[in-house]
Amino acid sequence: MRRRSVLGGSAALAAGLLTRPALTQGAVEVSFFYPVAVGGPITKIIDGYAADFEKENPGIKVKPIYAGTYQETIVKALTAHKSGTPPVTSVLLSSDMFTLIDEDAIIPFEELAKGADDAAWIKSFYPAFMFNSQTGGKTWGIPFQRSTVVLYWNKDLFKEAGLDPEKPPADWAEQVAFAQKLTKREASGNASQWGIQVPSSGFPYWLFQGFTTQNGVELMNQAGDTTFFDKPEVIEALQYWVDLSRKHHVHPPGIVEWGTTPKDFFERKTAMMWTTTGNLTNVRKNAKFDFGVAMLPAGKRRGSPTGGGNFYIFKKSTPEQRAAALKFIKWITSPEHAAQWGIDTGYVAVRPDAWETPAMKKYVADFPPAAVARDQLPYAVAELSTHENQRVTKALNDGLQAALTGTKSAEQAMKDAQAEATRILRPYKR
Image 1 (cartoon, rainbow, N blue to C red):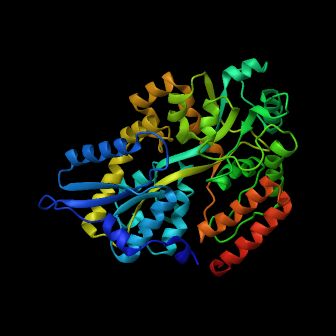
Image 2 (tube, rainbow, N blue to C red):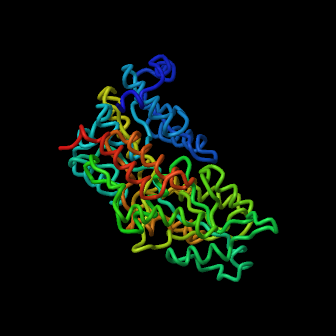
């Protein structure tokens, strides 16, 4: 059961994380779990936000607790919830929504945000980001550090290959054709430069959703109790990914590491890569060549899953803490702060009016690739999210990696993944 698989660790760990220092008399403390799962000086940025908020709201103390990866953070948050000392709020994956609901760990924002202004605030976010934030007519998460998958390409290597450096591949056929021209081999036959890399560790299901969305199919229903891993369009999408390496020889064989893919891009070991727009600032800082950013190439249609983290408010906090947390979340997701967060990190500013702020307008004018992920949102779908999400996702990830390493055919891998997901989700069928 999810409870066993998610809730490792101990109550002692949670209690240790949440030991409370003495507070200014009358101050309300908002403990805030934050997942440090991306590169860059993220903790300094978050600390700066907390300090700025406290200056404007002296009766509230925001206490960021850096809890590791997203996976480590949800384990710690749910362990703390079970021990009775959860954080007041936390940034966790948007796809963790059903897990948190099933554990009775969070409350819907409608319990706190009840006025007309609050309703307008909830409606102010991009609809694509709300797919993983709402269910059953309630809002369980508020978008914060959200992303889509985008294509990065090395313009210098395009020139060397005789390709137009300003023209990324527009569709699946061009993606293969361009990658063939961009792949370089030594006399031994080993590749010294790959045409394309799509990571298959860390979040393989998420990258795979790029292929499935482009092939006109979604992986689950909105209720989170049914998956469609064995649909012909899903198998076809996986076969395309497998063929990049096994048939076309333009992609590294086997498992491509999530964390090393940007490094390979910087070192010119790959000419194109799929990765999160959350890497945009990292790429801008570290790429010593002219690069481009584009929407993912289209199959039957364009498309990418959304991804990243939402704010959640935990149920076992006090009414005063909840009210303070809501105030902080509304503050940090305001147009100005959402814009600055996007500028500082590369994540997509989560509401349209953030893109109308002077700071964001200047940023996009100076650096047009910043707008690519925003422009892809009309084609975006919800990230894979179901009840028992970690177990269901593992079944899919295992199938993907089996196909990519050649231990199973794409068809068999997806049929096996679907059978396991069906078994896991059977208790949740309505």
